[in-house]
Image (cartoon, rainbow, N blue to C red; front, side, top):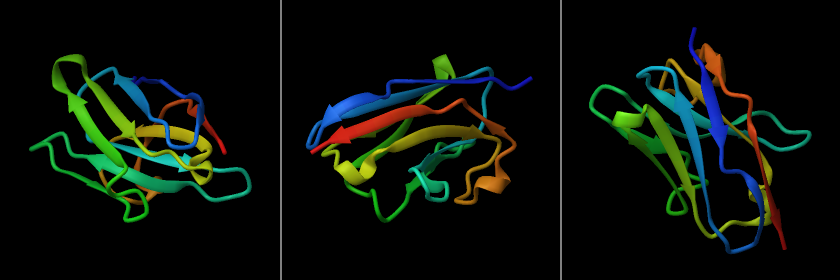
Length: 117
């Protein structure tokens, strides 16, 4: 059974940084999504297991970076220059590397990121 365990969320002031982690029970292509209250789940970034290709949503380019530690089966999301509108529950997902949430069969429990102004 695929298990994903996220960590690293919290309360941070605008302009600050966070690094989210997602430890997986195996080697998978993975993505990060976020969901703010009252909004649909939104793609943030994805990393392909084979070859390590990455891409991110235009809305976060330059501030969000996805990376992977293969030895630890862990994917990271480095978030810099945080803005209040980045406030959301952030989820990691495994089994695809698309922008579409429905393509991912496995999901973590989510980690809350709250940015104060």
